Length: 268
Image 1 (cartoon, rainbow, N blue to C red):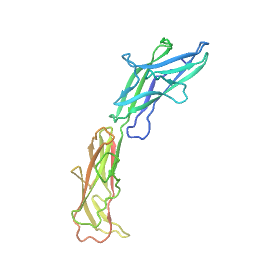
Image 2: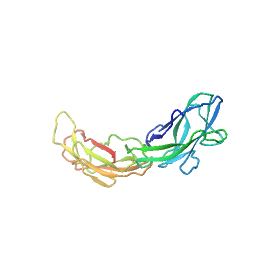
Image 3: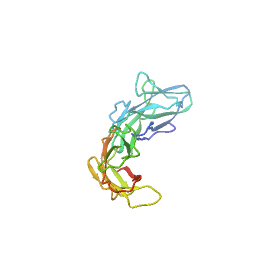
Image 4: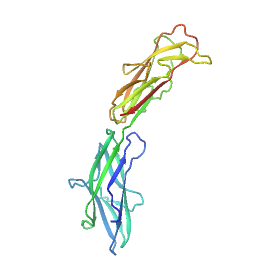
């Protein structure tokens, strides 16, 4: 052995598009003159072959890195073959692959394994090597505004809530789609503290009041407003209805009125 592994760390983002990977590099040296065929495999703490792992519900497997020289065994899942010429050194390189996605609670999930390096006859060439595999799920939360209820990212996105011609009591509805791997805080703030002000070159006191409800709860726009939420641990998350209602429309100057809401989510 010229280099031994100790830990494999996977930084896992359940909401990312793309793989999450951890690397294991093993330095080997053949001290004999004859070619040596090696068999590499993992066992768990109970001595059971570990072809795959479940860490926080996330399915993980080891796979040979491209051009590493490792070969998978067609007859034995989780077994890798490596050939070293006489007096040669080489690197056996493995990467973890996520084979089953999940949304685990934020935290660290670990499994302690042993790496066995055997010859063709099943004889251990070195003592079993301890390897800890860790999946780290840091707190994450995402938010999306949509025009219809549904899974996260479904439906047309919403950036403007347009009332058209203002009428007292007119309503509009959007949906706040959220997903997270930890309890989170949803925050809403209004630039004009719950009123729409007239746009134009000259400021006027004319404004149009309105109210907002989120999941039936009144939102106080006179100051930054927060709500504790804990969406289900799924990729779909939760879809929260958000209702806008115009207040009294009477005597305001003609023109276009606007307010800007800032909606954000942060995980604990």
